Length: 584
Image (cartoon, rainbow, N blue to C red):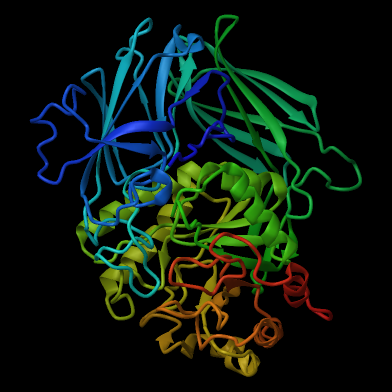
């Protein structure tokens, strides 16, 4: 059977013109005895006994292997010759995600490594890659059954259980090469100030160069060019822009009007551009106004979110295509949602790209580990900050959620050390990103240091929500038998959002171990009646928003608005009417 690899450019929000996709068929081997280096797998000389389609994990049908047994050490190998456009200048080897620990060799020489299964990395292989002949690329991926390792929804036991699923090991997002000149742009953080109409950037460069030239365009027309000298490895610049309309703020980004400014960075050595990046930014401001409301661009925002776990039937965490991500967003918007809580996953870059360009709010969430100790605290902190940096430039991302439902901090209610850990993640976020809100421990057992008080409640109906969630009772509330505010903490008037509710399955789907919450609806009409009751209760509470569980069926969880193939189970317009009820 043939399986189709991902062929589109893998990083649309930060793009070079010269690149070469390395997805497709690779050689592959398990290394259960962990003797790969001793056997010479790193040099690429020893035999690899399998084939795999990258970027799909071996546990998936799309990989061509489709085996669910645990294998903690995996080896990948592929031969490649550099495309003609990459044979001059520098070469980067780029990975969007490898779960969990990656080690990379090029032509038998160690190129580098990376720890963390959900974030991207790149390696400069300029001195390792051969220009006029073939190259051997080898990757070792190590993914332990370790509960201190940030895992998200990947279960650490052989069979899926409750709302956890099979693992996703090894390369599970795209691999590619990029070319640059004698120096390169290694990254850029972009911050647009709505109130001042100023765009700030901090650009990281490597190699010898003199200056950075920036060209800003809006609706296809260049509106600003600015050149700054380099300050060293990191260069800061501020670009002041005129508003595009003197009456209406048409240049601001929102779900209704996702206006983007396009930006070209050119790294200059004298008058010569030695590297060039195409990207974009947006003027978008999110803040809590102190009265229990959240504002977007200084106007009240009501968030109508859907929980999105980002799983596909044949490829698990790996989207089958960029188009599949776009279609999910369009379907969610057609049902009246203006955003998604991307649950326990860092998604493929095209999800954030389409959220930016189509106008779709996103909550970024750190995948959980499940046993609190120093190893977990270190892994979560380091990888969470890497996540914040990776998604920093996306205007669609408006909230960070470093912890979920006390997963990995199971004693946070009573343990001051675990509450301090949650606090540390809140302050670490604020230390590097002032442009977003933080839901510190989403769901329950909130600490004082949070910008949003979040509630998870899988009630069957919405009647009684208004009295249950009276604002003056939040501090003493037990939703789903879990205390809303952890011991020693306080509710400080933050906006309240019901960030998980619903989860209704259909009776036809809930069988053979599949499930939803509170029993399955007997028919589509019963489902709509229950959703109508829930949404009426939600709107009567005066929350700052909601997040419905969930967008799609996922494995044994069959409580999606879409089925496991991401096709609607209900009339999207019927869902839209309930998400946007008259009178609210």
